[in-house]
Length: 155
Image 1 (spheres, one colour):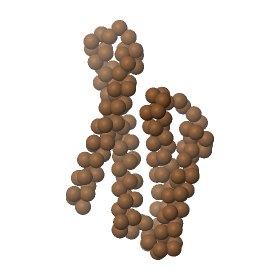
Image 2 (image 1 turned 180 degrees about the vertical axis):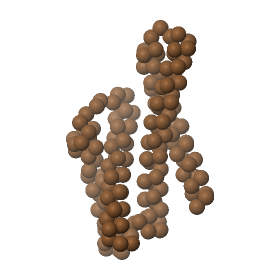
Image 3 (image 1 turned 90 degrees about the vertical axis):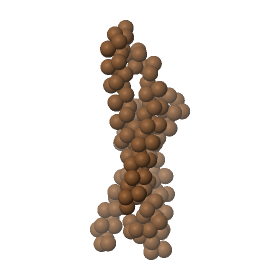
């Protein structure tokens, strides 16, 4: 691997880690408080994209140490590369499925409310929102696990 490819891989991992920690922070906030409050996104303050910069820095420092001191390239096949690829594939796939199922279920419940002529469809959706989100999380984890299992079994 050339130095430019390695630099590109480190940049990709850094961006993915910020993406993952941002959404994990949102999900944890939701399960703690049952609400999500919008905040400034491009900040290191709570709710921002760079809120968990210390976690990202520790992970990157660990990869640098493995790469520099032990000459273990985390991007080449091996146990570190496998774990890195698995995490950087599984978590974004799960996040995608969570949003997909949330939008799908809100749409289906909205259609159901319209078809059954609910008096206030917004109130009906508000009552069902926790069920929709929990169901979306469960289905997303199952679907992402199945997808990763297919990838691993075919590899």
